[in-house]
Image 1: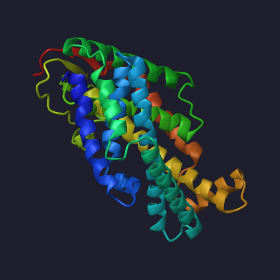
Image 2: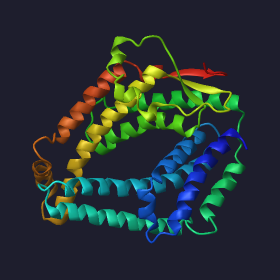
Image 3: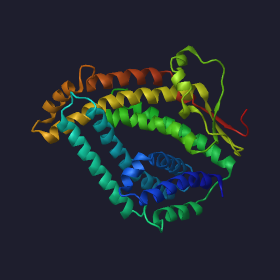
Image 4: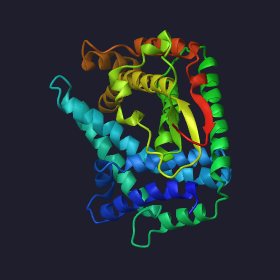
Length: 331
C-alpha cells in the first residue's frame, strides 16, 4: 500500500470502528458526537484537501466534500450543544435561550442521523466506506520524494492564499464568522496537515528565536500535544517546518479561537432571542450583550482585537518563514 493510501486507511479504520459501534446505538449521531468521531473525519478531510492540491484533484475534491459534510454537521451539533451547556450552568441566562439551543442541538443530531443513513455511512454493507476505499486504490499515488516536493509547494501556495485573504481587507474585519473564524480555519489547516500525514512532516530546530517570536513561545504552546509531530516511523522523506514559527502559528490559532468563541457567544444568544421573541436583530443584539454579562466584549471590540493580532503577526512575516523545505533525513 502506497504511503498516501496508508495515511487515509489509518483514519478510515478509526472511523469505521466508530461507525460500526454507532450503528448499534439508539442514536448513532449522538454517540458519534460524544465519542469524538469528528477528529478522524477532520484528518480525512485534511488529507483529501491536501492531496487534491497535489494530484487527482477531481477525485480528492469529491472525497473532501463527503468528509466535510459529516464534519460540518458534527460541528453544528457541537456549536449549539457547547453553548447550551455553558448557558445552562449560568443562572443569569434565561431558560428560554438555553431551551432554544438545546432544541437546535437535537435538530442537528436528527439531521446527522438522516445523513448517515441516506449517504450510506451506516449499515453492514459499509457502502460509503467501500466506495471511498475503491477510489483511493485507483489514485495515482506518487513516490515519497515526489510527494514531499509537491507538499512543499502546496504549503507555500496555501500560505500565499492566507496572506492574500488578510491583505484584501487590510486586516479590517467586519464579521466574526466570515472573517475571524474563516481566517482561523485557514491557519488551522496548516497545523492539521502534519497530524494527518502521520510522520512525514517534522519540525526543524533553528537557532535562538528572534525577540519578536518569543511572545508566542509560551509554555502552554510549547507543551501542547497538538504541537508534537507524529513519530517519523518508516518515512524516509520529510517536509520540514520551522519549529518556532510553527509555535507562533499555533499561538495565533489559539488567540483567534478565543476571540471567535467570545463573538459567537453573542451571536448564539442573539439568534435565540430573535427566534423566541419578537425582537428584531438590533434589539436582540443589544439584549444579547446584557445577557452575556459585564465581561462580554462587543463584536466590534472582538473584530478590533483580531485586527491588532493579525497586523502584528503578519507584518512579522512569520508565516512566510514556516516552511524550511524537504529533507531525506531528520536529525
